[in-house]
Length: 107
Image 1 (cartoon, rainbow, N blue to C red):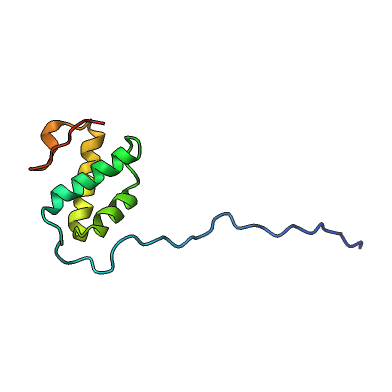
Image 2: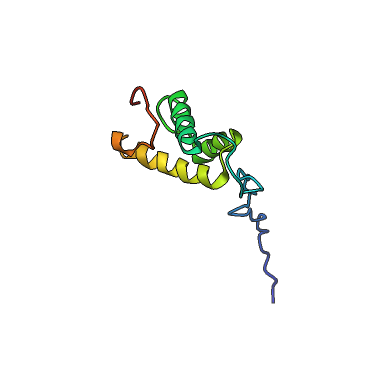
């Protein structure tokens, strides 16, 4: 019997790879905000970041980092960034603003 010659197969490249995620959350998630009126501060920071980005809200992780770096507590910042993005996506109704927050213009 004659032996068959087989072509060598090229090494298969992996179809998917894993890239470790970048952690944006603070290690100490519990605690109090160090700024006065953290809810209002969060909305103002999100509004200013949106205005600086040309009227489109930046990525959620970017907003979280901006808010946490100013002294807003982790869970307060997370909740209020979500509320801001929902409010912005709904067309910025005037009735949806937190108490004490006034925006001069609508983007």
